[in-house]
Length: 141
Image (cartoon, helix red, strand yellow):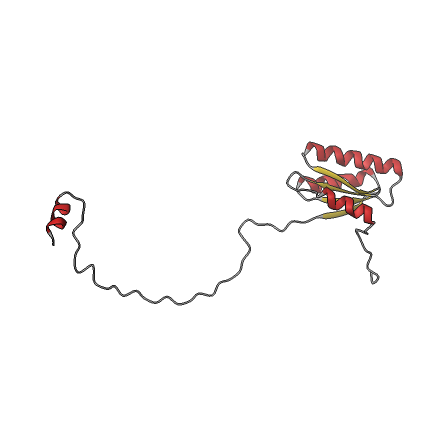
């Protein structure tokens, strides 16, 4: 031990090293572990609901889905004009109360989204302009 080491040790600025501790330690070799993929904890699969509404009573189904944070696409192909207006008004009021979003896709199709979803309005407008069908009926069905 040098004089400097002894002075530092006396002042408490350097600890005494045991020569035994400085010996090479054997570190056991670890075996590789196979990684298993799993979904992150708490991550849920999100679901979008598509409903055909014909009567005002069908609107409650839409609101029930929105209350559990599921976005809903509503189509109104079989509803008359007055009934369609009542359905849209009812659902729009519920969406407003839940701080969600409403987006018109076409005269008969609307997207209703809860607060935690973002509706891309530009893409919705593009669908309407280009007259892209949202739903294609399967020929085998």
